[in-house]
Image (cartoon, rainbow, N blue to C red):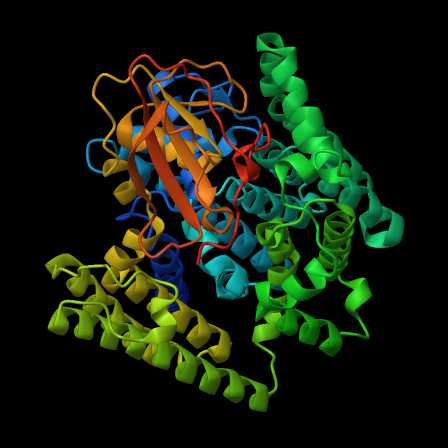
Length: 591
């Protein structure tokens, strides 16, 4: 009898183990499908093109200097200190460029850092949502992050704001953990503060500290000793991140330290450096930007709040999301500088709220979302495929007037096997993903993300050469007939991205007349908007060698002059050619 009981217990154990294995296996297959979609979206388009106007060009200029000089303290752009942001993204991009230098061009390797930080943000958000909302909820928070329109293009560029997004996601994971495991939560929160500081400066620590202090002030659930122990751990963990680099920078140059801390941090927020540095906060900017930038995450998050309106303020994840979102919006609204990507941290509390909200949408809303996703991205994908077929058949870009206002008609398409193979593979994979997600929870969200991923992947495979032809500076600087025996190249009005790309494609750093008016260079490069006409350069002293612009661009022109033999380097010019000591950065949207 004893053996019989033991045998039955073993059989029950074996059966239970098998059942658990089957459930776990099915669950893991489901998770794997979502992970694959996130990874395909994150890494599509990261390689295969030059640094693009506007942000990528100047960011890569700093990365190139770090790669060549091994100076990891002072960011340099085309031979000049560039103290706009702390160097974390530059460090990681330089590291990736070095690791992959045997297989990828330097700029492609550097761009992989963007994929790394985006992956960290998705992982941290997914883990946070799973801790707060339960098993299976993490995937939906990650999907919300990549579903939002503001994430689509800029997350695939070299952007120093990407580590900032990752830092807020890590800090959210710290808040999700700190009440139950104080030291682990404090460690993660401290890491978030430190990474945010080395990404953007004072913004992240200020927002995270305010959030941490307001939570126990507003809600009783956070008034625990464990919470304060966790905050103490966070302070200790964040100190090396927030102290070492500024201290080393100050020891290297107090002037550069003040340029970073006072001009680019305090000055951009308070406004006294905005006229010189650009990115002015225009009236109603955020009220116009937030709705489309956070779509569809924000409407789903608002639905989540409405559906739980009776219990919302008693739930820690909702408490955190409301406080973090409010503090971030307060900082953005009061800052004198504003750009779309400054709203990236808002995605973290939105995704935490919208993840479970996507699983509880009314049936009619879910069906509407599915229909919109299939129609919208089906049409986009069909247009991309049709345009590629037209280019391959006719040897010229498709004659679509609206498109030709954005992309240059001078492009000459060429057939390549690898892009078409990748495009076919991703199209078939998207159809498979639609079949897999059709009967799963949050079907509207999943199909929307599959559509976004398919459209972006097709765009960055089939149309990548055309996009690169339009957005790269290669054709401009490679075509310049720079004399071989030039001692140096002076420049007037040359933007930061253009200076970086001149260095990358020609190996020469420009000497800006704005800061070195007496530079005795034999070649002069002028950049000027077409509306101001041609530069008034004395033809008896300077002979024009070349003029041009990026393909399809009519408002941005370049002129290359060579000094006549025996002539002085003095210039005669009027109007817009007298640019400010630091030209305003063109940080318009990528497309």
